[in-house]
Amino acid sequence: MRKWTLTAALLGLGLSAVPAHAQEMGVDQKLDELDARITRLEDMNQIERLQRTYGYFVDKSQWTQLAELFSDDATLEIGGKGIFTGKTRVLEYMQTAFGPDGAKAGVLANHMQFQSIPDISPDGKTGWIRSRAYVMSLGGWGLPLYENEYRKGADGKWRISRLTGPFTMYASWDGWGKNALNNTWPDKFDPPPDLPPSTVYLTYPAYYIIPFHYPNPVTGKAFIPDRGEVGAYAAPPGTDAQRQSLTVGRLVDGTQPIAEPPKN
Image (cartoon, rainbow, N blue to C red; front, side):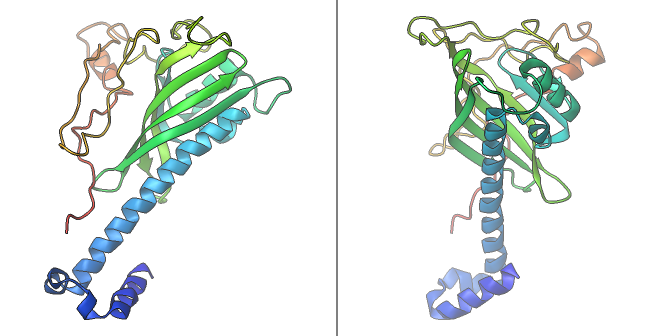
């Protein structure tokens, strides 16, 4: 249906309105390019909607609904808590750490999200978003920065395959100027994670540069900040299990292929 619509649009413009290079390559090839471009834009829109939906479910403690946004083999890593593997563990983490499903009187947990930058892989099966969240909760103020990964399923629906949300700042209601708090750590509260944190970092007033999933849009070069790899004690060092643990929940750094619109 989309191809017929695009064909009608091109014919409505008249061949004289179609650039010479488009006539040379043929209408079918041009339509395929336009279809690919529209699909890419729709995919970017869908993963943005998915991420924003996650934020609204956090707001009102809709943990069961939230868990359904994840793929079965997804990973979740928030703050320095460590890595949780699988959709069922995502749900267990939310319900254990933050209470049962449902909004509660006297509880504030607004999870507002801004500045999202989405990208899609050339094969259209993987997506990434970098976005910032501003958290207002009973505990104070929080500023996580998400670098997440998404996967398109066989049913055509996008799901979160890796949620990574390091905090850049956390503070009490007195504000970050007076009372900036430490990052979370694996044994700070239940449940314990499946794997150690992928990265050890410090929050404000120190700083941590979260790797960018995309290269510089002008130079095309990836900016790769220094980062400390951890997880050596997920299993005995040098074992296959330990090496495998260091591949779980890892951020991409902008050197992976990213789909771009046609240049012509």
